Image 1 (cartoon, rainbow, N blue to C red):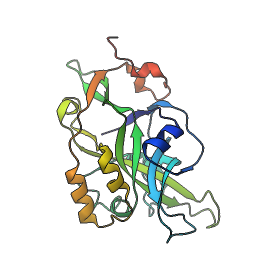
Image 2 (image 1 turned 90 degrees about the horizontal axis):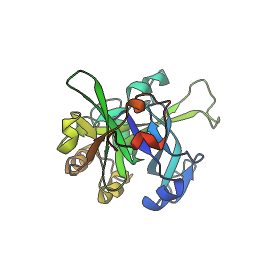
Image 3 (image 1 turned 30 degrees about the vertical axis):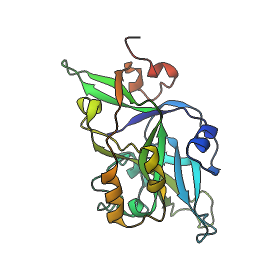
Length: 238
């Protein structure tokens, strides 16, 4: 699973890296220890709400909370249990299949944390990264707050989840699953709102190559989401 990650790119960096043309929400500060239920940056493509037939535009949004809340959920607290979604089943599971067909996104990351159980039973944190920032495949949803009127701008709660797949390479020695990492050439197809057939979504997911990530051990300070600074990315033996 992916339960913590780092993302330190500025909004300008993200606009340039993903060829986005619009932003939503205020700029988030760099974070070295993003935790579930926090607001995160996501990249998505959609037509303006007031012009649903207009051409979709690519947006960097900071209005999205990590932990997907399906539109039909009775209680938004369900999101804390949906920070990840298995890529193998998103087109069948009721919580994810609508978003898989129409609301896909990317969560930019410098890398993510995973914990491995040592011989003494202690959980050891590792940071997994690549030479370039990661584009984690995700889904997003909009949940309508039934207690607010339809014209209230705060009525819609935006949430997201990170897709996972069986881990291979170095990541597989630490945890059996890892985020779905999109190579640059897969970002456009993944965000394309015209891709709305679930079989085609499955085919795209199955064609994504395995990532090659490098792990190194980091301080147990990352265990607490209250800790958030660049020292968290420092290898323990440095």
